[in-house]
Length: 442
Image (tube, rainbow, N blue to C red):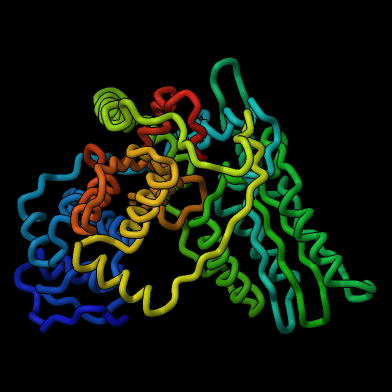
């Protein structure tokens, strides 16, 4: 990886700098890190910063706030902060008692509530398609998928309501439907048929109570051309999870097609263990502190963004939207990276600040709240799990007339990393405190 700015290499000094340099090298995938190197100049961004914080917590036992990283992201400065940091107070995530009911996580609780209110909603389907070229060992592929379902208990989830409490039921791996195979080799219009299958798989609703919440279809286009269609419900998955699923599927298929055993290490915890841990941690004083912070941060925030649209906003969200792709050329991208690094920001933060300024101009509102999705995988133990961890962070921008980028970047930086201590699902727990007409994402 090539950094926009190059610095003369100076070897890390002391135990903390040396260990921190190892962590940065692992997270950033660079050969070496010097004591004067800058995390964001080496290619770091918010997602990698969270992984780095998780590794520091695991290997050093101390807590690094993102605000401290953004204040000065040079390795020596971060090492000095760590030398003075207190011990992490976050409890470990441990396997829960399998004889006790499994609770929903806060994110699952929200989607379950929406399912009860709205019924089956295909807006929460997560489809993925993999085009497979070459000779395919179908039985090995089926075994690989079955192993993933057995490995990740959340993929075998069913949801039930018992009075005022919702519960997760985990069924046996054998009860999950096998991979369906569709042969289009003799179809007169195979591509049109494939397009119809892709649309049908992506738009077919899930029954959260009966399951399964994962379905797969293997489409045979030719002897050495297959398309694997997988669809999961968002309540058991997220974007990060699809990467985990794809990597594990490739590793398992490679092993099984060569007659080798499962190469994946066993999982230390399951998603249900995280849900139990989350509810134990986010309670009492911690919940009160997080809730108070967000109530203060969003006090007086506008309920709606009044954009001059050419159609009226529907009374009820119907999900009939679309997207417009915008590509930034290489020169502009390099300029944005350099600008962001000079101000200690990520490119995402810079672009989001510009987006907020545009929305403020179009709406005529100086107070803008933007929902920003965050991976929410702040613990190294959950990086390899399939499950719903993603959350929506409310980022508030208050524009006070024209401002230089330096000031705007600082405002965006503060908004992006605000929060009391280690990030938690505060907006989930205090969902009733949203503005009345707001429709936050999943």
